[in-house]
Length: 311
Image 1 (cartoon, rainbow, N blue to C red):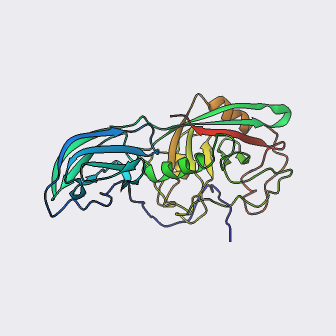
Image 2: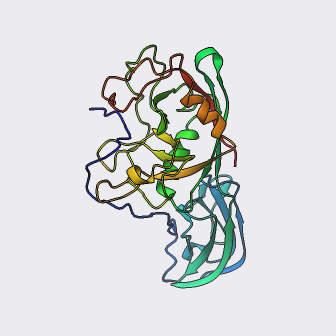
C-alpha cells in the first residue's frame, strides 16, 4: 500500500540511526598480488557533487591496481570506448558523495602508490514555483544541500532532481505543495494537481525508500527536511520547509527519531512564505493526511515548473 508521507507534531517511533555509506572500492582491479603497479601520472576530473568523476591513471601493470576513495562512491574501472582500461592506462569513474574535498588513492599489493585530491563545490538546487490565488506565487527556491553531513538524504534528493533530461521534465516538475500548516511547515514533492482538498493518488516513487539520517542538523526555520510516514525509513520524494524553529517537535528526542534535515534555503524565504499564505485555508486535506493540525492545500495549486542542480 502506498502511504502518504506526513510530518506529525509527535511521532511515536523507536530510535534508529542511519549509517553514513559514502565510500568507494577499487573496481575490477584487485590491487593485490602479482607484479606491483607503477604510476607515472594520475588526474581527477570532477564537475559537481553527485555527478560522475573521471580518474585517469598512466603507468605499468595497472591491472594490478585499484582505487580507494572514501569521498567518492561506486568506484568502477571503465572498459568501454572511449575509456578502455589497459595495463598502461586505466580509467575509473566514481560519484562524489559525503565530502566536498577528499583523497583518491591508487593501491597495488596493499600499498598506496600515489594519491590525488578530489574537490567539488557544495551542491545547490534551484526550484521554480508558480501559482496560488491570482498567481501570487512566482519565484525560485534555492536549496544549499548538506551533502557533507547528510549524504544519504542529499543523494536521494539529487536523484529525483536529476531524474529528467532537462529542468522541465524531471520527477518534481508538475508536483504541487500539497500541505500547508501555518507557522509550521510547507510540504511538497509527492502529488500532482488537486482541485479540492482531497488529493489525487501520490506519484509512484522512482527509487527505494531511504534510511533515516539525522546527522544533517536541526529543523530550524528555513531548512528543508524529508517527509516520511511513522516508519523511520520510509522517505522517498516528499520534503518540507520549516516555517519556524521546529526542533522541539521534529528533531530526534525521546518521543521521535526525528526528521532528516538536508538543506538550507537561501534567498528564498519570501517565496516559501508566499506559498504558505497563497490561499486562505478553506480546503482542509483529506485522504490520509492530518486535518486536525490545520493542514490544507492551496487552491489554485502552487506548482513546481522547473528544477535543476545548478552547482
